[in-house]
Length: 101
Image 1 (cartoon, rainbow, N blue to C red):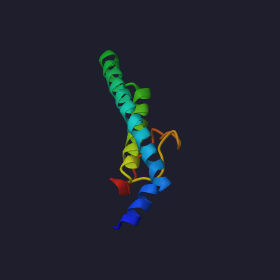
Image 2: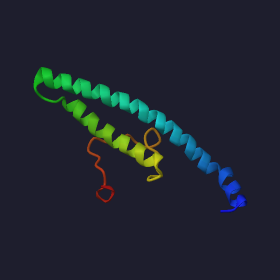
Image 3: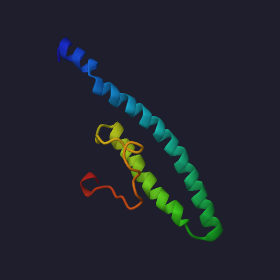
């Protein structure tokens, strides 16, 4: 790699825009960790009180886990499509595609 190609790479606007989105999603990921922890506590309390998991929390937990997966794939350059709020929120029935497991 010579100096001119490095200078061209550094000046590429799309790379810097991607970097800003990656920073945004890193912050969102931090928030999802808090939501995930709170959800786990609420689910645990629900099981203690009712002896069964809350169906709404189960559904939200599935979609949140897919969302976290999408964020991780985006910030590691394994996915080009930006996660929510730039694409639809994953449904609770969304699964990780077989080729990605």
